[in-house]
Length: 206
Image (cartoon, rainbow, N blue to C red; front, side, top):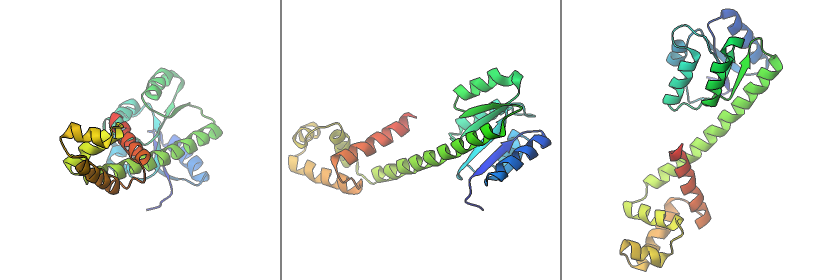
């Protein structure tokens, strides 16, 4: 398997798929083509850097239904909607629902290439952020329940003596727990610990 980003092309028109494939490969990116949404779902690997070129009108599951399905599976691969003039209101709806762009047929090659490159860059950034969140989540799972309590109060700005009162512990015990939290979380400073906690809470909110 290539480590090169892949552009997934989903369109039931063979001529359109061939044209898009030629355009994408001409800028040095890999492609995979699918004539239907179901074919795409059967073969898609969500773990590789990629973006999706998705036609609105497809046999069976429509492009909009596929977009909704990807969102329900928490797949964040950027989606560029390809649409005809009559489908613009639907495309706008998909855009508001999380698609990164939509392009009208006949499309400008230059504009589409720009959109594809932006989508690939976004996917790379998303994956870096997701990896950071998973790393923080793994560290939090290493904490004992008491250490997690101490961490939650520390990031709220509570002092050791306040935490001791809140949890019914001695200040010395709190200091020990706090030191273990900093070590397990690999936090060099209180600011670093707060940043990790915010990173995790933002990911949960999404």
